[in-house]
Length: 112
View 1 (cartoon, rainbow, N blue to C red):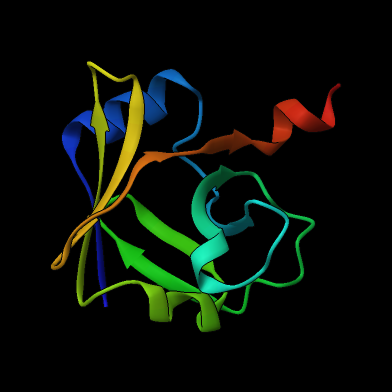
View 2: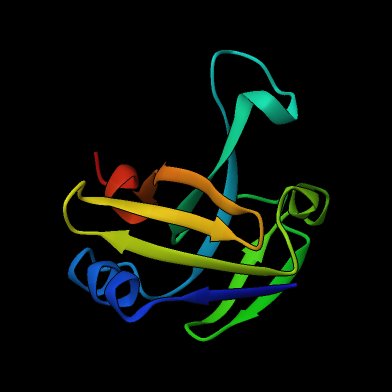
């Protein structure tokens, strides 16, 4: 499985201070934990999460993930940033997987 960040996504992550210690976190939405009720979130500095059990090699470096969650991705996946909607976008071989991918800087959450 391949995960690539576009130059625009890398630039936006840099502006957010989120280019190091990245992970793909599966967020549940609508209060359910099934595949239709979850989406990937880009997280930085999520160091206290013991669930991560695999590493993805990307053009931005190592990205932590939960191996079982990766079945929702395809062989070739891209994270881009859409300037007009001001959101990250997750795309794959199938097309658009998430047009509004959440992001969280866990360092900032810890300081609140």
